[in-house]
Amino acid sequence: MRNVLRRRFSTLLACGVVVALMSVGAVLRAQNFFAPPSSRNAQPHSSPTLVELPPIQSSSATSSLQSVAQDDLSSRLAELTPEEQIAVKLYAERNKSVVNVSTFETRQTFFARQVSEGCGSGVVLNRQGVILTNFHVVENTTKIVVTLFNGESYEGKPIAVDPNTDVAIVKIDAPADQLFPVDFGDSSRLLVGQTVYAIGNPFGLERTMTKGIISNLNRSIDSPQQFRQIKGVIQIDAAINPGNSGGALFDTKGRMIGMNTAIASHVGENSGVGFAVPINTIHRIVTILLERGEVVRGDAGVVQVTETENGLIPALIDEDGAADLAGLRGGKLVITVRERNGMRYRTQEQVRPEGGFDLITGVNGQPVKTGEEFITAVEEHEPGEKIILNILRGGRQIELPVVLK
Image 1 (cartoon, rainbow, N blue to C red):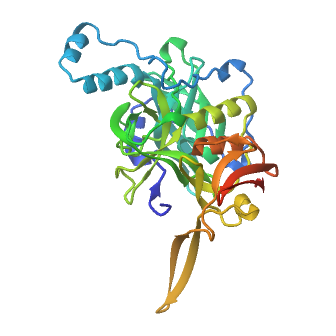
Image 2 (image 1 turned 135 degrees about the horizontal axis):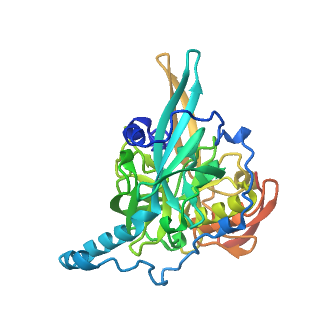
Image 3 (image 1 turned 60 degrees about the vertical axis):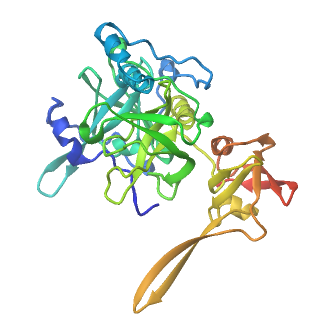
């Protein structure tokens, strides 16, 4: 997966034409808003109103989609199939919640100062102007411009970022009546096969909607933070292309269930394999960022799990990771380097543990049934803390102490 994953949706060429049409000014400040994590000192925003995020809604909650079938639209909707009506109504209501994020990066060369442009997508979180997007969209930028559905543009001010989950939040000073926040769904209740809609700005084409299904759950993809992975990711087949990064993934009731983040492709364009960070992860991370300015988390070294009725199978764990050192029996990647005819070849193979896989049933005595629940339970603790993994091994319940890294 790592050699085909293309995360940079905010391509410079695709968005250059759109950004050129905006009057954003020619002279940019050289201050680096989003420096690499090692040099960034994120500070929490002082305004308590910024913590007003949409609540997580259960699947039984009534849809907040308002009726948009009025006048001429009503008669046109009547001509459509029920499935088409859902898509049309969803887009009419939710496209206003998705914004275009244009970025500018200033580089000083030996001869002159160069300005490069890029763009991605973002989502309105509240009427105070908090915008959600991907970290890789705004990384190392010197200026951010957010364009709303009505064409009005505002400079984005950085609040905080979390490279580990590819999350960034910025704030704009826009009138409240121009901001249409999303409603959050509950990503822990998602099922493979259910219909989803992605809205974003592929190739700078504002608020484009595509349709697909959830292809799988609990995937792991490379994080912008080196040697880290984003876990519990949603895999979708809806068309995702450069510029979609930071856009919203909706269910059929118009609730945001994820943020589109990456694609798997040899050519950097849609191949039917896209990935979205689940909304429950985003809600947890953004809440922490708005309150504290940064996220400090522990890592158990469990890269991927498979959900079963009896527990979570640790399908892949980090060699010499926290869980591995504690003795958890899980799958590992074995990398072999061979030399032939003067050339070196590198192969990798996933191997099963001797004695069979353990089943993870809980963390610190609290049951975990999904990959998301496991990640949340672990990341509530900081590096160096000890947790207890409740596991089932050979039909026996075992408490396995794990010191997080």
